[in-house]
Length: 113
Length: 117
Image 1 (cartoon, rainbow over the protein chains, first blue to last red):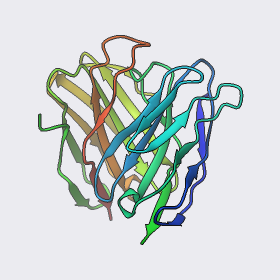
Image 2: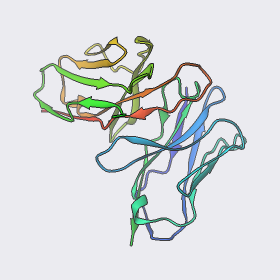
Image 3: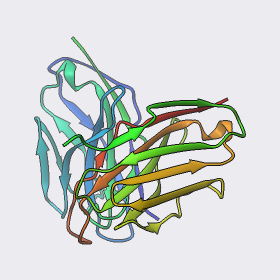
């Protein structure tokens, strides 16, 4: 079956630090990959996506590149802000999103001023 | 658009009681998903519908759980009887998932926090 593995944290960084959250996946087919973000008390929001190998998804300064050879989709940001504090979920779908999503456990990110 | 609407936002009940969670998807979306979030297991897909028809319910934990989608604008997730281990946040999501292998973003509701005592 499909699975997603990501560092669980919490990850605590100072403002303006460089961020990397690792994500690796196992899939039987050729999945689409996603990062979702969950702010306290809210539902999940799509942060970025990539649908084929070597695609780079980007949004709000965050980036992730679909690496088929290493089955990875690591999330990066060059300079984090306090407002980036949230839980980040890596996810995959083999149906391009038409099917359900398989999520990682989530990484709690805490940015200190 | 109001987004995906879920009710209630919080539910506290006693073991053995019936619980019904409700979801209104975004108008025009034809795929609807129910997820459960717990500390131990993270986010899990329970069931999803395309055009009101259940497609995959393999994530439904046991027969105490049932889900319906009587029309395109409403879905329910029912637990009967409820147990303490059902305590979790239940999310509903919808998408315009008309075509397989064509990416369609899933939009999540705010969730229902269920506590079974």
